Length: 185
Image 1 (spheres, one colour):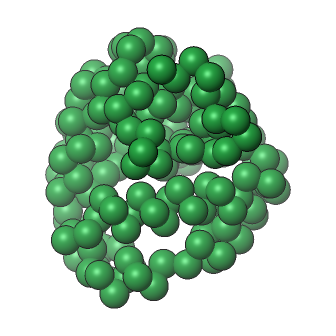
Image 2: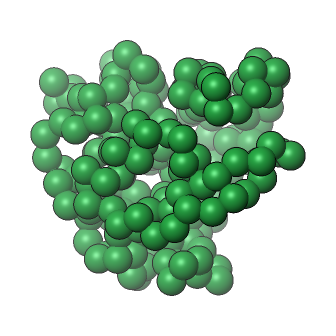
């Protein structure tokens, strides 16, 4: 089902598509967790400018991958090096979003594998990811990929009080089953 979808490094030309996937995913996923006014005010143009800066930077401390189907970006994931490490992890899965119509086809799993492989090749000893604790779908996804729940703690996002959960893979190899058949996302 996902054989025709390519996972590849993102380029600056992908910034607008990445931004659209991210904003749409936030509006769908975080309704009821994040105030509606905040979600409505999210700007694809501002997000695209951010992602263009990231992708143009050429930093070896950041990697962004896209899932592309017939020339269309349908998902993306990003990773970064943690300096200093957080919770004992020196690499982070900092974002992963897949279009709603492409969920449960193994794309998220393949995107996680791309980021994990990048981190491993760069010498990282594991991978951490933070998620809003109320995002049960993402939490189940990470758990199904063998991530360990590390903590739950309060945090603030743009002045909004929330609770985050941290998950991690301590083994620097690709998370278990990340190349396999479809699980959620």
